[in-house]
Image 1 (cartoon, rainbow, N blue to C red):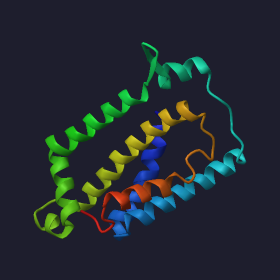
Image 2 (image 1 turned 30 degrees about the horizontal axis):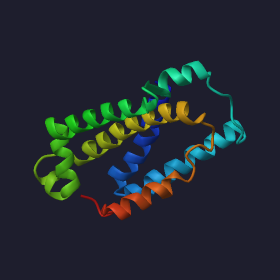
Image 3 (image 1 turned 90 degrees about the horizontal axis):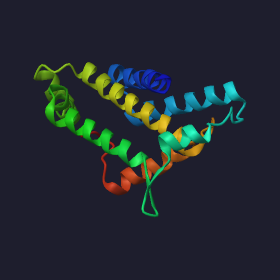
Image 4 (image 1 turned 180 degrees about the vertical axis):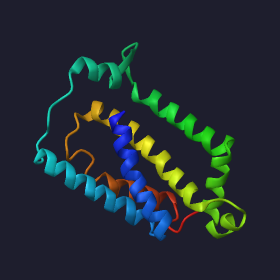
Amino acid sequence: LLSCVLTTAFSCIAGFFTAKFKMHPFVTTLSTQLIIYGLLYYATSGVPAGNIDSSIKDLIGGRIDMGGFGFPKLIFYAVIAIIAAWFIWNKTKFGKNMYAVGGNSEAAAVSGINVFWVTMGVFIMAGIFYGCGSFLEAFRANASAGTGQGFELDAIAACVVGGISFSGG
């Protein structure tokens, strides 16, 4: 729960600067990430602050033995997240508003959609997903202050290779 609250709070900060000041989301999220890394290194002096008991680690993030083949439990959590995101995007008014704002925010505003709150909602939803993901990653990798550092470059490269536009849409 704490993981979701903190990631959502920091995501709201990034969302506020994106929605209110029309800053590029890449800049706001990357700068927020750097603030978080700085706070974590300050709080822990860059030293791992403990570890997770192996029985709890296996309960939440281990593997299911399927006849000699170990199937990661994290796949089930990913499927739940995909179903939740699909439902929100395709079956709710908020989801339709996200598509409108992502396609053309000026046209969405003229249509009566509150672009600020839709943008904030997207960042809040992302923060919740970030929190769940970071919680599960901690069980997978015995997380410390430096866990995930450098992952942003992998994510950016995957997006660019996949054809994602950094201009929106």
